[in-house]
Amino acid sequence: MKRLHYLFSILCFALLNVSSSCSKDKANEMGEISQESGDENQNPSASGKFELVAKADYLSNNGSGEQAWGDNVTIEAFKINGDAGEVVFETQFKDDGFGVAGGRWKQIDYYYEYQGEIVKSSEALVFTFKRPAAEVTLQVGQMDPGEGQQAKEGKTCEEGGSKNKVDESGKWTAYDENNNIIGSGILLDEYSIEGKLPNSMGSYRFLLDTGNQKITKLVIEATQWGGEERGCPTQRGSYANQPLNDSGNTENNSEFNVMGLSFTL
Image 1 (cartoon, rainbow, N blue to C red):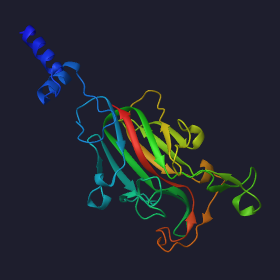
Image 2 (cartoon, rainbow, N blue to C red; image 1 turned 45 degrees about the horizontal axis):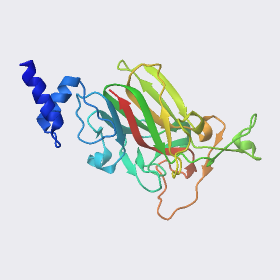
Image 3 (cartoon, rainbow, N blue to C red; image 1 turned 180 degrees about the vertical axis):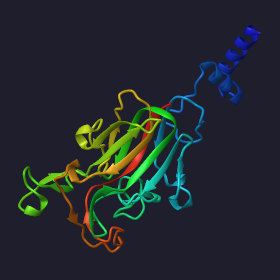
Image 4 (cartoon, helix red, strand yellow; image 1 turned 60 degrees about the vertical axis):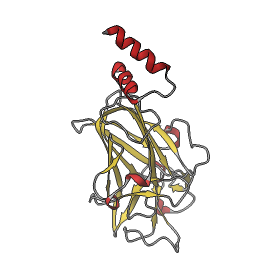
């Protein structure tokens, strides 16, 4: 019987167009199926490396509720006040990716002030893995370098005078299957893998360090300019194609989107 199985395997390998039955036999023999560089037709029980790219095709029901990003990840959006929001696919600028509906640019927006109150808070995208994931890498877009301003050391934004130029920024928080925080970090150029990616407005990749603990939930938010409390919001100009955002003002602060996600199961 073993000899027949061996001869069948040799025949599969020799054929130019390997049949699906051969492929299945080989996969069973290896014990895992690699999904590297593929984000279509995933097998939810497969193991290997998965690479997901943000696309409008993944969204349904106008982005309301849980959105399936392939077979292994779901996405949910939350407004600045914590209410459920809508996931959107933003294409207005060069770096296309997922954001939250209702903000300034359909990205993940940070607000210092919201509807007349000081909130210092952000919209959020929450990614949930159906199985705990390792080696998670996040790619963001539209995190424009040098767009913001920050009060100098010992100064406040209200004191006026010259300010430091700083980058847009965000933060990530990772949770385990018991909803315990296992890692967090600031999304800024100096913490990225290789700096700003070529031919982008502000796209960066970040390897999320959780001390070898696997991630079940990942929360992505924006921060003040530069990732610190001294970030000074500005007022954006009036754009003919951009209605007043849902904060009730024209505040401009950090905002960005999520372009991709890779991980190992």
